[in-house]
Image 1 (cartoon, one colour):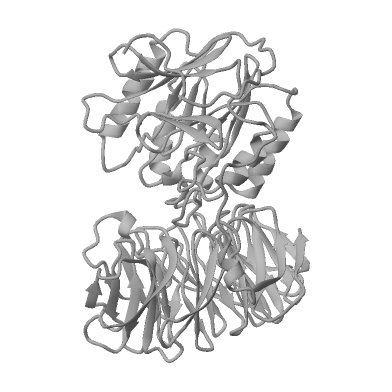
Image 2 (cartoon, one colour; image 1 turned 135 degrees about the vertical axis):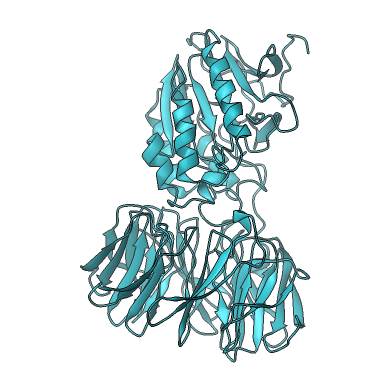
Length: 626
């Protein structure tokens, strides 16, 4: 390739940017490193890149744009930091989806090691802002949480008017990659955004984010080539020039962006938005009240005595009044809350990534007790007969006295970390972990009864996000390998396993325990018999929600099956035959497992930060900002 600059093929609108007084400079970008304790090649590739960067004159700093590891584990993150710390210049880093989706620490290890999930710095007149583009702990599209969008606007508003800005993410801000891309582009376009820089796709790509120029660059991995590589950026008085640098070879320039002309209208809007037309087809479904918390939410709401409890991404557990969404109290834990809490007998129990399990008074939020774990507590809680059951990332599962916080028993035989809600039967506690294993423990003393792996060998196929369901004799799961599985509840043996419906991590059980519901990865809900010795499909309903892989469970209430999707859709089906009763689109982001109060009223939370009471009865809509 010649040294001729390949200008990005955007339609220039002829507006000039403020005069730049910036001094020319160069920086590098490393992305998609994928370090793993099971593969030495990614580490070798990173070491070679760091060595070559240190031998290259004129590099001012390095951007590291996510997927630092393969499995989000602390060991690989620490190893990556050890190597990156050898750089002779500063580096600035954001997480990728492999750090945010699979993380034993609830993504807290990233901040502990690198300082934050965001970064901000100025260099020769440019403002650089890097931020997390998700998804966090739940399989879904990428997502930028409300608090990060607010942070972006605040930081750019404080900057000198017209200062050129470069935004750094892992995901591209496009439909099909980030669910709320339009919220991000609408929020930042009033400012002088010169470029988005990202990775994720492991190859060089030019992008347009609603007119704002973006660039994705190659992975640091060698992949099928003999050597790995990275990107080099040259900022001149009028351009940003992009080159690919393979290890041991001359850099090859492949793209360029003007700093003189702008590519978008600062007062414009996104070129496309999600389609909410389904709401006109079901006008009886309304939002009785909605709370906009301004913070991402990854756990489901819990209802107890006309109160609603919700944990959020900033580690706050809040109590809301059920009738109108008014917040009564809140308690700040030390890190984000991922797992769904539970409440009973006047006590609310919640785990936090700060390595604590909390018992709080439901009326006031006063702390009754705390239980210290060795690592983050990401698991959801199940309370049964005065005992709270919860798993953590310290390879332990605990049974805790609800009123005193006394640990009744601890099971320590787990290899992976736990994020699921445990199933508690009359005599067993059953849960999955990110180690390919489903565990069944004796409810009375925590002794192991059986383990099931189903021949799974990849951590990413673990039955760890699904909430298991059971009849008297069978346990049912849907795992990331897209299999619906029936397991003998007493022996732990596989009874049947089917890939027919391509289900993933979402499951539900009828009240009479004769029907099993599952969400497929393409448009449909399926219903299977729980009593058949072979997989017997009873019905399949085409709901039309598109490609779907979010782990939100299906809940039956009063003969209706309720469910939700990664793109903000909630739906209700007749349990007997799968007939669609209604659908409603709240936003375009992940809706966590919904909580039906009865056949007409349903509570839900969203990664977009909403707590909503939906109703099919005529009500006056109310919106509250926390």
